[in-house]
Length: 266
Length: 325
Image 1 (cartoon, rainbow over the protein chains, first blue to last red):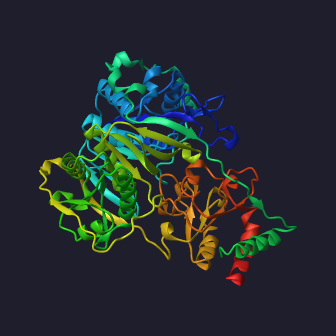
Image 2 (spheres, rainbow over the protein chains, first blue to last red):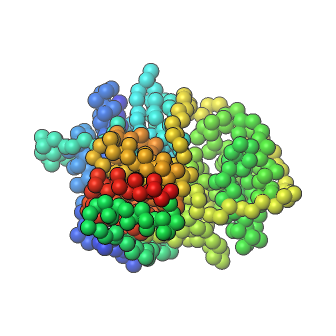
Image 3 (cartoon, rainbow over the protein chains, first blue to last red):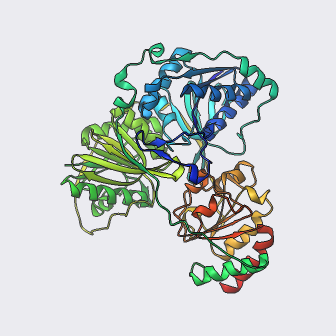
């Protein structure tokens, strides 16, 4: 089985609030010296892929569209144990809207060879978009299941656990298939082994530009965006937290209960 | 003139709460631009939804029944909506941002070569353009996106739009659509649906939510949270750290990708406040944080806080709450 996992490198979303700044020109988050990570659920997707490979054999490939520094994300994925990595890095492509990104990734997937399974995280840790799985499915003409925590192979077909509002669904689909991954206790990302990190450092990772994928400007880049970002702003929160004092923990706990009563919320 | 098509769903033979909110948003948009509100009802069998949709603001209802639409099979659902959209020719298509809408909206937009915006909190007409607001960066920022070409497919975040008011006797035009759907379309099959077990109040509807996180260090302390929740007639929630560790069921998770809650009172115990978690609960009216780390991000959104170990605090807090309630 061949699995391609699409990963995104983002600025660590858990930085303190006072370090979160926006660039008024690009209307995106300012990178500054902040550290970069693989978007959280993409790590769960990598874990699902690796577990599946352990069960049924095959190969896992990581694919990333990003700045040249996103090579770090590919190397992390290789360190987790994926077999191959591909990076698409070309500045104008990075300004694409989700349709543009899906088009770029689909072209790259076709160049690699459409696998049995295309995985994405269920949400992009920066923009909050939850659309890449279904958009890739459309771009590649594949069936799609979203918000999946577990993928199994049964009688040559995929049997996946899809999380819905009031529980979960077991959904069956033939390969090839696109799936977006949500976390649960079955897909907590593994730690890399030192040996794999060393091997990852040496591994050759092909880097492609728009021309390598035969991409036309009309479908990618900022000019192709279907909606325009007019404004991005940080809402002002009157974030005054009233910290309850007291000599002992018991006093503070009692104070909290009394205060809540005063506010008529209990 | 903006014609808005909403994708309706039912709840006990009536338009669902999400549908009423879509109708509310659609009616305001259409009224601002002298447009019309259209609704689509899809299913395996006819539903008695039409009158309710008219009463809540729809001018036209497109209904289509087809066996393939049972269980909202994704491929069939997208194909059906694409056919209805071609006939209704709306400028804006609104879906609820639920598990069905999240899967269907991007695929529909891709097929219609339409614009797309998800998890919309507010929408307004601005001359010929349409402005959509949504959270980005885990709720740290709000983006305004402008659509200048149509159609646009948008999903609306539940509980963010005022629902439509009902006008008894309001009528409209019902249009029965015959869909052409081939059985080979359906490439996924629902094998089984498993409902989660709900003890007491449902998390999404609870007026009080008591949540625990990594700081609880295991499943055992959640018993205390359950005791407190029961006392306050609320529900227990958890952060992703706690559910991914397997301490409590995943269905308890409050956050960006699981449940969004906006209770009157949210008590976060041992939750540091990862953006992922905050995105699911900052709509709560009163937020209480109990955490050992005074710099934890949860205190940035909390209204009341105690810096300290929950172990020393909770028993007394529960006791006092019992006395007061």
